[in-house]
Image 1 (cartoon, rainbow, N blue to C red):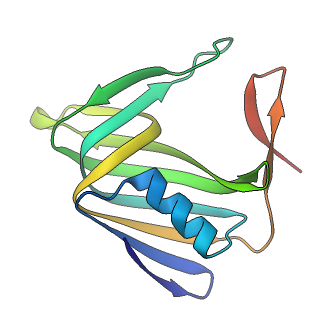
Image 2 (cartoon, rainbow, N blue to C red):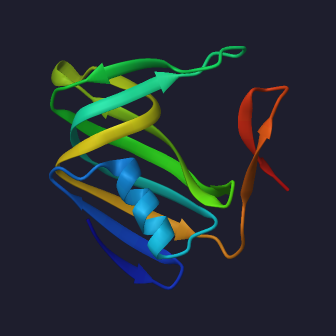
Length: 139
């Protein structure tokens, strides 16, 4: 993982073998990011994505171990229980131009992944919402 900061913007480049969520979390800790939005593109070869259905306690997970092209990576960085929390969704193209997507648990970079991060001045905290059963941004 390498990155360069330009004021409130950060360009993060992942290398083969780097994990997306792990790398963004590491960057958030190193740069003391308390609120940000990001998007990216690239390629992965290990992917765990899921869908959370209302009323369920956990995601319905799917795992892929194949070459995938990231067509969209989008997410945010907030604070939950005093630590950075990375929330990410991903869409990838498979062989034959089939598209898959969902909530990203983790993915491993196969060539490179380029992520552009817009840091927000301030702090956004997530709190557990017992009615929804998820963590939501609290204002």
